Image 1 (tube, rainbow, N blue to C red):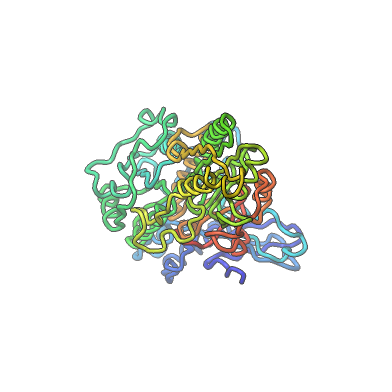
Image 2 (cartoon, helix red, strand yellow; image 1 turned 60 degrees about the vertical axis):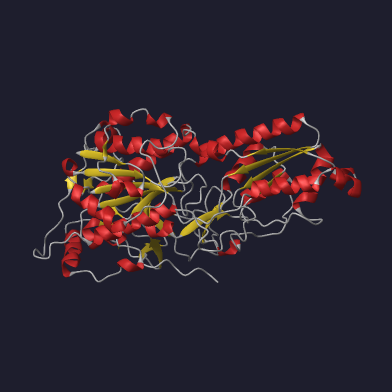
Length: 549
C-alpha cells in the first residue's frame, strides 16, 4: 500500500508554465509533529498577518496560471510560534541584522544569505510522464539569514555529544564554537561533559573558546566525553533554564535525536526562547532522508584498510578465508561501500539481505566454489547481518535502547571451520578440506579514527548550518544534506525511521556484479524494500523505512 502523506506539510502552488514561485516562510515554519498541532492564539495569528503586511515572504503566484500543482514543504518549528506576550496583541520578538552582513563573506557574494523562500527538492529523479502530477517534497534550505532572532551578546550556547563515537565529532564541536564565537560573537559557549546525563549531573559546564578547540579536529572521539542513556527531560530543561542557556546543540544518533526533540518540546511548553538543534551522527549512515551522515566516508576508508589486510593474509596462505566484520546494525552501508571500493571482496552480507549457511544455494557452498576457483576468498559481513531473531525480547537492549545482537562474524567463522576440515574432506572430497581462516574485526578502529579531509569539510558545513538555523529562530530540527544541499529537517522525521540499503538500487546491483555472489535467500531483517519511502532515495544507495531499533 502507498505510504500516507506526511501530516502537517504545507501545500504550495506553482504554475506549470514555468512561473516564479514564492513560498510562505511563516507557514513553512509550522511544527510537523501531531503533538504540536494545538490551536494558535489570536496573538500568533495577528503576528503572522502583521509580518505579511510588512512585506515578509508570502505565498504567491506572480502570474496567474491555468493549472497548479501542490508542493509539499516540510515545516520546521520557529520560536515565534510560542514566545508570545498575551498582554500585547502586536508584540513581536525583535529581530537583528546578522553580524555577517558587511563582512568579507557577504561583500564578495551578494547571494551569501539564504532567502526565506528557498527550499531543496528531495527527489530530483522522476518519471516525466508518470510523476508529472506528483507534488515534490521540499525541505528548508539551510544557511545564514539576514535577519536573526537572537541578540548575539545575549546568546549562551551549550554543546553536548551523546552515544557512540565516530569520526568527525570533534570537528563538529570545533566548528560550532568557531561559528558561534567568531561569526556571531555569541556571549558564551559551553561544552556539557558526558552526554545527556552531564546536563543535570555536572556541577559545571566547560567554557569553550576558539583557542580551546583549535586543534581538536585532529583527534578521534570527543573531547567532551559521551555516554549512553541518562536522558531526563525535565531535569535537563530545568538546568538549561537555570543557567540561561538559549541555544542547545546536540550531537548523536537516532536515540539522541529523540531526546533532543523532547527537550525542544519541553522548552516550547514552557514558552522559553530556546533553539534546540540536532546534528545527527552515526558511522552506519542510517540517518533517514539525508544523503549521508558525517564520519561515514572516514569509516569506509578505515574499513578498506581491514579488507586490504585480509587480502594480504589470504594471499599468503593456501585456501585462505578472510572474514572481515564491519559496523552496521540495521544497514549495510559501510560494508557495501567498502566492498565496492575494494574490488577484492567475493561476498558481502548485509542486514537487508537474508542468507542461508547450508544447502546447495547457501553461503558455505558458495565459499567452497570460490576456493576451488582461486584458492582464496574474502567475505565481508555487517554486524547486523543474519540477525533475524536477535533482540526480540525488549529486555535484550543496551543503555541506548538498541537491540543486543549476536556476534555474527564469530558465528560464521565457527561455521566455516566446522564445514571445511579434514573429516569433511574424507566424507565429501577435497573441496571440503581444511582452510586457513583469518578473522578481522576492526569495529573500534573504524569509528575511533580522526575524520579525513572530506568529512572535515562536511562537518564544517553541518556545524555552521546548525548555528545559522538557531540564530534564524528555528528549533526542534536537525541539519543534513539532501542532494548535496544542506537543509533543515524536523527532528520527528529522523527520530523514528532509519535509512537502509535499497537492494533494488543500481548501487546494490553494482555490488552483486563486483562480487559475483548470488542473491542467497532474498530479503532480510529490514523486510520488503518496496515499503521504502518513494521520496527517500539517496545518492548513497539508500531509502527510508519505518523500523524498530
